[in-house]
Length: 416
Ligand SMILES: *Cc1c(COP(=O)(O)O)cnc(C)c1O
Image 1: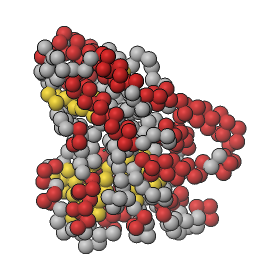
Image 2 (image 1 turned 90 degrees about the vertical axis):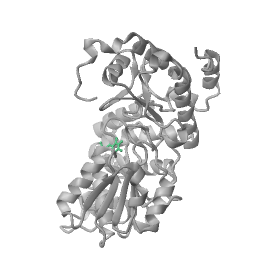
Image 3 (image 1 turned 45 degrees about the vertical axis):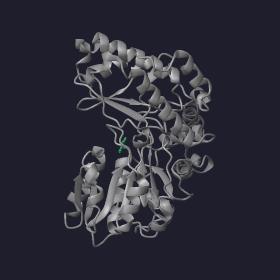
Image 4 (image 1 turned 90 degrees about the horizontal axis):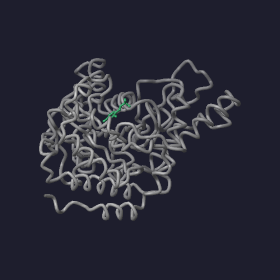
């Protein structure tokens, strides 16, 4: 018997007193779906839908190439970048919105290494998001180990590995699998004391956790546009570079958009000042415009409120599943204390894949993460407390009745 779980009346009150409740109306989410996957692909906003139509039909369709100037397409990497700056505690002119996280990481890591001529180590965590490690490994192959060597260690060993050989500390704040959260301020200051530059990947943090890039004296950061920022599939990512480094940046994917004067068609590359030097080729305007409009959803709210609600949603979820005998086969892999995790909960189960498929079929959209994790994401802008209650009821039913063992749920799809 579980006597301490929130009652339907209490859940109703949580929704009624939610300062973000009106935000759901700014999204287009199918009525029957409980979307616990905003951390993988944020849903479509009405703003973005309208903007996509406007850019395609009115701007590209009617104004053609003049739109680069008349509709300020050329400025979009910075227009969108400044909106992201407000979400990560960065003063103006330190953000640009472009390319993917992977590509941005290459630019930033190569820049940071060149600022550390007497050191060659990139230190990271062995369970960092794989693309971050792949990019660092690619740089090692390209530059040779004398110039770039990647070292990965387990999370508990990070602090003791911060020594004078390390050029760059590359970490993701929130672990994609279990949601473990790093203390950026603490690790950044430890690194700084040993002359190490830091690169933070904010992909699972931006738009849902309070961040203070400037105050914490972070050197560089990158992050994803299609998760909590709801920028759309393959949305452009972003780069933060602390102003104090702008003079020293040398990023290797030099392209005309990062040139000081792209339209003089100078045969020699001369990098632009500031964040523009991180640009490479022509920005994908359709994606970037959609991203830019998605960011407007954040204009009149605070990340503190967003983060508080994310925690409350996850706490309610935990409250509703705890002490349920049918769910004992699910093991919580995330930190129980919300201070040490991002806006997600991960549970392991031997049949995690089947459970995810069965949940998705029952309209509770969640992620499977190899090898055995069911991942629930709590995007506060469109989720209601009532959704959490409904989701947990469905989870209980599926696990209790072992629906997930049906043959139809065993076949692995291409994207999991
Ligand atoms: C989602 C995610 C990425 C995405 O990288 P892309 O190159 O933009 O596909 C990178 N790093 C982390 C930690 C992520 O969670």
